[in-house]
Amino acid sequence: MSTAQAPAVEERRSRKSREPAEFLRRYLQREIHNLGRADVAVRRDEPEAIHDMRKASRRARSALQAYAPGLGLTERAQPLVLDLRWLGRRLSEARDVEVQWQRIITRIADSAPLPAQASVYARVNEYFAEQAEVARNSTLGALDSERYRALLESLNGIVDELATRSPLPVRARTGHGLGDRRDDGRGPRADAETTGHQGVQTGRQGPRQHFRTERDERIHRARKGAKRMRYAMEVIRPLAQKKTQRALDHFNDFQDILGEFQDSAVARERLLGILTAHDHTAESSFGLGILYQQELQIGDEQAERLDGQWRAARKAARPLWR
Image 1 (cartoon, rainbow, N blue to C red):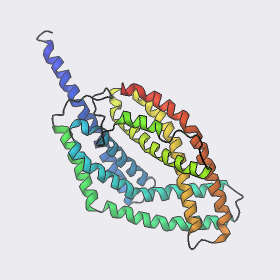
Image 2: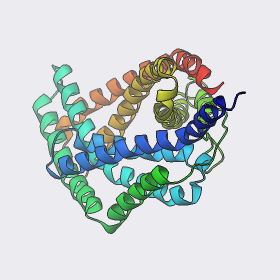
Image 3: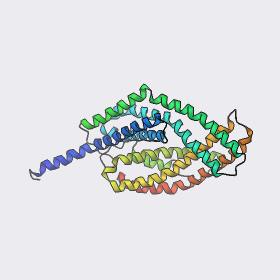
Image 4: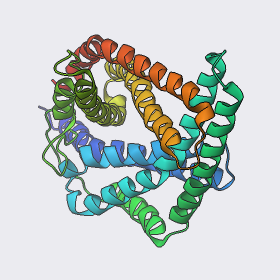
């Protein structure tokens, strides 16, 4: 190598060593911006604001879990991951009420003629109006808390550190220089393998109700693993645009099925809650029972589709971890 070439080579090496921190910094910075916009929208009670805020918090949390350890940020990131999980849980009830209220009302309209339809409408609206008020108060309490303000300060602090520090050169199984181990020793590739073993095998064993309970638990775990995988891939997208986008497209399809399955499972819980409420009237019981049976069928149909879609998603993601 000539003397003239040496500085250029060293510059490329230096730039490559900075890339992991820079990719994570940009990703977190974007999600901080999304959190801020969603915060204002939630306080104004705008449509989809809760969903946008939950999504931003999940993305930031997943990125930190996947990549902070490889960048020497485990100690800084661990409490922040816990705070982001807390925020997501505080937002989840309000989001669940939004989604399920609309879902069940739509199902009533699409199921005409439903026995005692007017009574079913009235009971569902009454139930969810009460739930929405409680959930909104909980959400606003979280956004006005010291813990939430400290969370934002910590998140901005990590972004500032990533911009100024000299990052550790890391080597990961992803092959892209981004640490792939979280605090529990797992990472994106491990998530992919775990997702494949959790929830996507839908063969029936044992009594029907017992089978559904175990299946639903497995699919719920698979859904969480698939989300972590997708967010981890989003961070490294600048390194392999086409391969990453292809994998993300497949994972989005996989998550669409998982999401519909999960919404169906939660709808069943909500319908049971309405049916067992102390102030529930018998007039709407039969119609609510029909809706419950419909959700059972929807869940079974989505579960049958999961295995094939997971195989396609895993195949598309495999080149990213080589």
